[in-house]
Image 1 (spheres, one colour):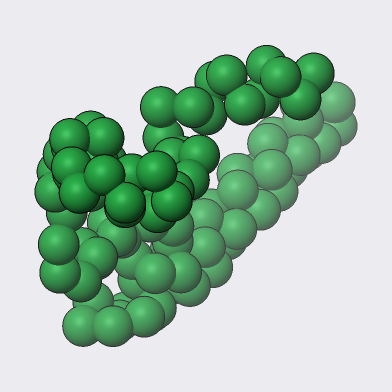
Image 2 (tube, one colour):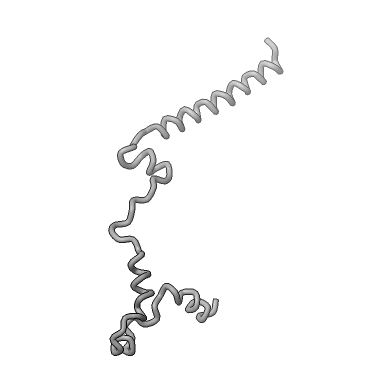
Length: 98
């Protein structure tokens, strides 16, 4: 990307010279009106808290701390293992009737 393209695209956000000598000596603040308008619309005060994201933040940190994911994982592994073992057991009896 060319430097002129960057300057052109950021021209509306970044003022070139806020306190230029000609602006200050003329005594007119009309040139600063867009800048003042931009900064007056910015939010004031502390940033809002981000939304809870991820399993760790949802279940292990803060007021919602719980061991539910650990218990669910152990139970899930047990059920998957039991299902596989049961299916293997059925296949064994299908091939060897006793």
